[in-house]
Amino acid sequence: MVQQRRRGGGAAAVTAAVMGAMTATGCSAAADASPAPDPARAVRTAPDVLARSVTSKARTSMEMATGGTRVTIRGEGAYDFVRGRGRLKVVLPRDPSGAEGHRPITELLAPGALYMKNRGAGVPADKWVRVDTAGLSDGNLVTGGATDPGAAAELLRGARSVRHVGEEELAGVPVTHYQGVADLGHAARAASPGLRAVLAAAAKGFTEDSVPFDVYLDREGRLRKVRHQFSFVNEGRTVAVASTTLLYEFGAPVTVVLPPARDIYTGKVGM
Image (tube, rainbow, N blue to C red; front, side, top):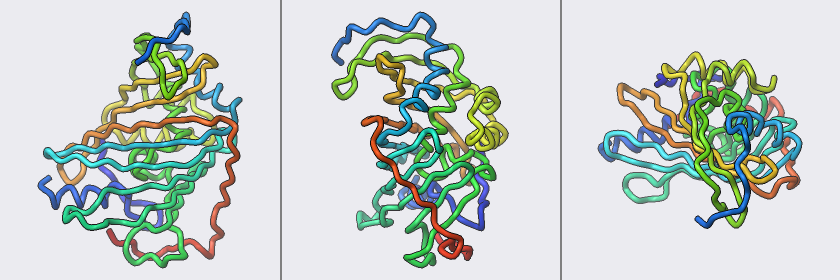
């Protein structure tokens, strides 16, 4: 579990907004692929296979539960696994009243940084909020409301106790399903340079080093789906988080242009 801390120019986490809403409410078809002879090796090397694929489109889902209340944050975009850059449109849940809540948040992911537009009250419409992800106590595995697809993959470098579950079909693609736990500390040490610092931050911030996961790899060893289970403490409450990342359309063009310094908002961000 991890106590969220606010860093990065005073920017509040996306999950903080969701927790506020939660408090207000009271809070397969068989395939003929054969399993890899070494499940742990297949899972640990999945990030390297992604790098050879270079890019993909991505969908994310983050389901948070506490006090009998459950909300889901969804994202969609694309990611470049070589440059460690991505772009996601993140949709927050409706307000408890049922009225439209926050506008969709545009997130730009880069090594060591998260840029958010339409993030929080008081931020001008044409400005971005920048967060230093290496300074977050969870390394942006949870804070942004969508786990960085690169970090989700690199976390698998710490896979252990991996077992082969079976052969399945995912969106018409034959995949092999594995289960196991990822060791945050080991993943941080084995991660690619661009994500080593953020996973090291998560390894220090979470009280539990082991992160259970389900992962689905296609016949080429590419990561198609991964579901991680996290937990952290927010204002004295334990929050369970299930983060799912889906990857598809490998090789799709990805263009991520980071905002210049003049477009970065450095003032106070409201909820």
